[in-house]
Length: 410
Image: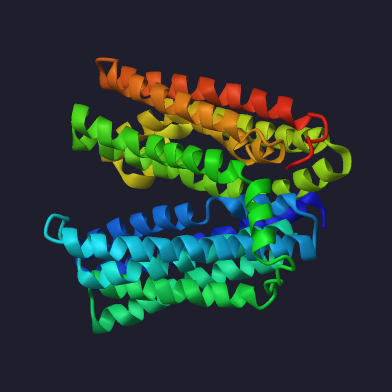
């Protein structure tokens, strides 16, 4: 299948999967009280973090394996690793929860009970999505995301009519997630590990860079992404934070959609090229040119019309959000180019460089948000500092894309 045709296929499926819960929220918001939805959202954030942690980020290595049986066995090793980590968390976490229950923030017992199984199902969904994308089954990937989004949304509305609580939202989310996972598991069954525990240990050794470097890097990246709104709210008030939040959401949504689609396709092509030739420079250039051209055109168009578009779409009171979006525009434009191409760090086994870059990003974010005195100066400092680091990120990924064949893994 043509490269950009594959991207369009994944993009359309991802866009529909994002649109379903967005439309469903119009109904869900009328069923559930804000407090219940807030508790559920906090629980969901913890579920995401735990679900990412328990995989060790080994699912990101699946595209590096050859098609067919080797990748199926790697997926099996990833699933076994995830189950083992989840089991350890349950054994260690349950006694700790019971001992410290009085000191912990108030949390409905239903959500506490559902946290571990929901995190396991979320992790499984991430593993099978990564596996499906690595195999190039983009129609199946899009179908799984749509089924999952529809199942979660419909169940939350249905269960909410009977019991409009945070626990109902969480239960519906878990069941809907499991429904989507069941759909995709039928097409990609796990394979038996011929060497048993020895094969599992070999897998851990071969891809040890993922839990050692990629997992901390992704955690730091998540922390850096959460800082701006919290710091701006504490320094300049809730209104300023609200304007920036809308700017982030408006600019970030299409970038996330397109970036995910390009990444799902690029990582397969880059990994295949690296195994065949020892580099992925040609694939990198092809992707970079299209992303950079699209980013430049969108930046120019939005720069001259951004404030007016925000005022028209959201009302005049939201014009300051448009002003914030224009300031942050170069940052998001560079993110649009850098994010899909970041998979080169995995292909070239440069996760330690990625971790160092993420730490620099966290330090730059803190400095940019805390040192300037004014609101506008803070936004500008944040955009310039973050944007500069993205330029460095793109330069590094380009350099690594032309590297020699990777050294033999031990």
